[in-house]
Length: 283
Image (cartoon, rainbow, N blue to C red):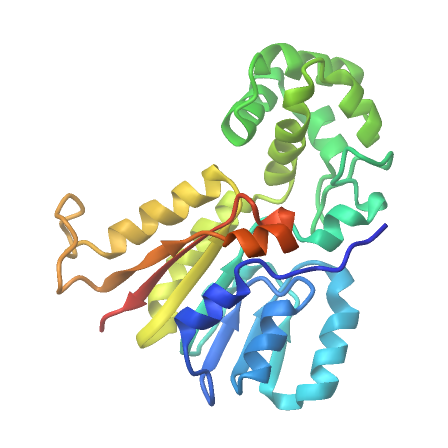
């Protein structure tokens, strides 16, 4: 059953952004359009990215309602490096969306038997093909680096030998139940180059933000959160002195990190690991 998508930390994001009337916002991760709709309802002009072709119905609904105030780009959010525009806010809601998890044939979930796909865009190698084409060393590195999987080499060898093509075939290969979710996460990150996408997109942010503009990022696991935290820390140091403490004349200032409230967690359990981090451009 497909659950209604609930945008995570939306209230915290809106509180931090403040008055959006006539502001220009880049929604880097359109998903089901929850953030975009809220920005538009608040009077903003919105440019949104998403590489998932299944978002088209939500895109069309929003376009019909808001017209030229909404511009959608069907690309990975790293394509923002090609934009020639300035924004008052750039917002990322990272990770996987509810609709991707809850459609079994997408192959993201180990709770339903389906082809082992995991592609957000529908383009490139599937998870099954990635396993079949990987060396034991490369696959073990994916499992360790992206899932912190114990005995990654043993499991990688088993996966390469079995060459699973469905989610249940993969699930049944994983002898430690605690490793099931981390293995699926690791493969999903690798299939979609999620960490590379984050790094390339964030590298474009300083040139895209207006002075005083804010970049907010909602993360869902420690790997992506660490990348965001370290990049933001670099931006809030004196240029050319990455070891210096945060100072007033740094190009960005940090925004206090936020986690979901108890009330939000009750309403949306999928928010439990979320963090919102942000920076504001100084000049």
